[in-house]
Length: 112
Image (cartoon, rainbow, N blue to C red; front, side, top):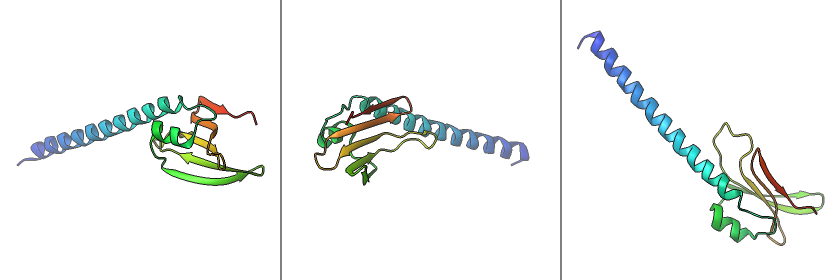
């Protein structure tokens, strides 16, 4: 095989690799877009069970104390370039939603 054939085979292989990467990135973005759209349906006062039914299980759960109140943060995954991944904050006692952040442009907050 001459150098030209090797170059063409390498270029085709590289092209296929880029296509696979673009396809998987596109799939991840579409899943993230779907997650954000579902997140926007969550309302203040919704139960943790309702959140799980709509969004599925979170990637991480963290309980924190803020201003003397125990809060349960349900954190969902997002592509690496996203600055605000979806986070649903629940009152740890009542297990009801007090804050919703779906992305940079959508946030609901309990007035209490």
